[in-house]
Image (cartoon, rainbow, N blue to C red; front, side):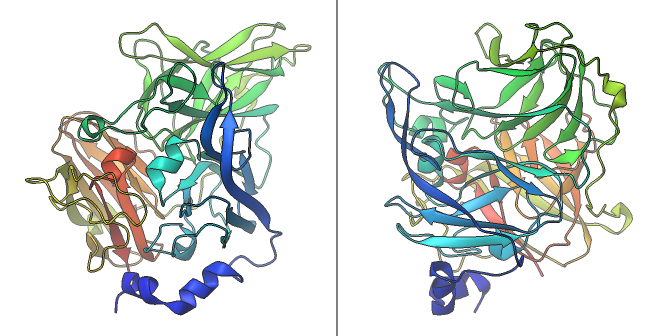
Length: 460
């Protein structure tokens, strides 16, 4: 009996999900998070049918500290099944939040106790991994900040959760996916927001240093981002500190940030009160859009970017390429169609995509084996081939990797968990498999994931 079949049939596992839960991290005080129906005013009329951890606001920023226990009790206050995934965190497999792979779904009225110790500081995020498309499209995505053990020296911290929503003129939800979109680049929303707000303004100390955490939690949209100021630098990518200088993006060369990806900027605020620094997005066929604005208030603190020390590196093992075994993965359309997934955690009724020319049969499908079985503690190179004209942000749960080569571009060796594959790109990523378990491996365009572009890698 394999692990997935055990989860499907284990009464012991089912009992753990209801009352006592798991106990991995010890004495952390539980923080209760209740997934519930919500409404929010985007337009003249409140938009009903939202899903959040609050009845009238976006999911909050969750805070933890590197190396300190976290205990998050997730209560399902809806009628749909759910489960919560902590995107980018290298935690124990049982806490990863993937139904039928690491736990059973959380039914309405039930709870699951997530307990873990985050090994890495940085910017991460959380979202459901059951009824994924429906719940994410209706709002259930939030930022997670894992603080460094020592204060890095900023005067302020600002998280920006980039999301778009598909709404009609009165603010009611339009269908959150389309077959045409799922078979192509995804179905984009028409109301672009930062923290559910359109072009919000945030006040921060004049002349101060702000850590701007930008998180793309969208189901589809790939953002082309830059800042309106050159008094900034990139300090972290997908949670992990940048160990070398990266060029600051500009209107001519914006930074591509795909669904699931994060970028942290150190921004020096303008010296005079009322002056601003903006987070800008380039959209096809549209003027440059301001996603969020940082506005200076108070007396000039006269800080300088050079005052900041480099962020301490996270304890990520670096692969030994001389001993690395290579595994190939092909991402593309489903050959000659295929049956839709089983639907236990939401089905779109289509099968358009595949990994290694086999579409994912669904979270609860029996007999679905791993894409690869890797030995714990070894170095590997994963060769990722995109055989489609669409871009795919490929996310690997539970592990961190480093891009090492591409047939199309020079890749900076950033520690990451999500690789944005370009059209016709063949990229190689390298990692050490130091976290055992069954780890989901999928495209973070959720329509692609739910129509076949998903699977898992087993580390034993």
